Length: 293
Image (cartoon, rainbow, N blue to C red):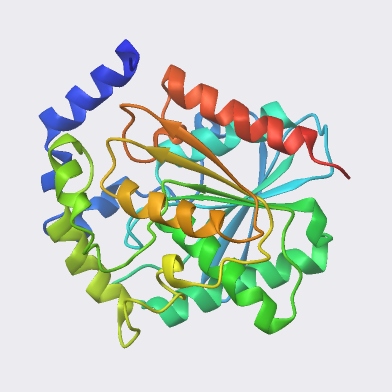
């Protein structure tokens, strides 16, 4: 059973009508925090720089325990973010794992479309490769960010670029079309996302890109020979049915995938300050600390 804190969070989101706040969608941007004030970064030093149109914040904890680096791509339906919960979550991971962490604040739709955004993510990874060996890098991200990290990984073989050591998608978007009929079965339990509103946003984001192109819908990519994947799934998330299809597809290849399923959890649950979110982040911290290098 979900914790009291999670049940209260669900009730609060239902009371605030979060599912309705996607219309008009850009009103979500009042939540954006592009530089973390001290209470959100828990004592981490922050350095910012830009790659193309992407702002990158490097969070460095006071005590470094590992040479590993987490590059984190935040969620927000490609339209807004990062928000306070993102900063708190990655600062928590950075401090407890003792690792340098990047927050990737990429250009947003509707002003920017998929080809430009994915180009920015690729350029960010190329910048990371100038600073770190690939086997020191872990790629993480929630929701739209999880989509972007998988999109990036699928591009790397053709570009002859090395993979990071691990992929950690959190409740990622897998199929831009959201046409899976099982999604509508989950919608009544969903407290954050709204299928119809997301489909409008996705049309903004796609531009001229086909919704089934693996660049935007990793479900349809070549999932062989990828680095190990640790995927977080929530049963009360409308994106869950497509995530399960992704897991099935990966399981038929030589790519290793580990599923962390949150029963009765909401979309992007590992970033929230609940007991379940804390346990999920501890899994990520352990992955960083146990990694070789």
